[in-house]
Length: 299
Image (tube, rainbow, N blue to C red):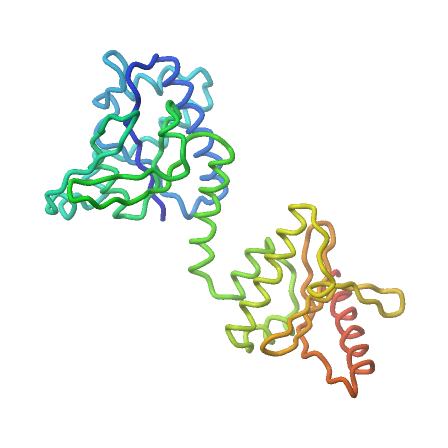
């Protein structure tokens, strides 16, 4: 589970209104991620009570949440800023025992970054307010008194940044799955035949990875509007019925037969590429069988 840490590093001077707008923007982007990955994101940690985190001389984090102009977002914000103080949720003693000073450079000024080091040690993400170009980065670099540095992923309230943070969360989620589940996650819960599932599970990890890479390439080509080369994917036909063929060559030539209908993938079968001396007859049989399986999957 990913934890976020409220990053209270902000430039000075700054207006209260700028803080409130930036806070609202990052909350909205956090909400998008939380709704997409409810089982992978576990909330926002604050270093201490919200009314004790002073963003300006006369504005606390609690005040800022209260002043959000959208009631739905305001109510949501109070439901997610509930994890404090930091020591109740993260191991702070290990970092304190290092006796090392950590800092972030904001507009040439060193800002204390002890809490950022703590969340980084837990593989967490920063929840930052986009109030300066130094803060509006996908990852922030933190320096230390012993001349070492590290970077930490950073959510700051703009969609392109949120897309990058989503990719990080998604990739970590995928890394914990078996390859068949990983493939189905990438394809957004396709409908697959038992024949396909069984054959896929019997393949070596190398072949499974090739299939996953092939589909990821197809999806990326489609997103970018590029033509997919026939060396990777082609459409085949049997008696006016068509189905797609994903090609793999090394280390073993394989053909995966599938179809995409209304954004749903149907995975029919996975076959060895026939040898040249019986290629036409055997491949026709593979295509025919795959189309027959596809018809069953669509029922």
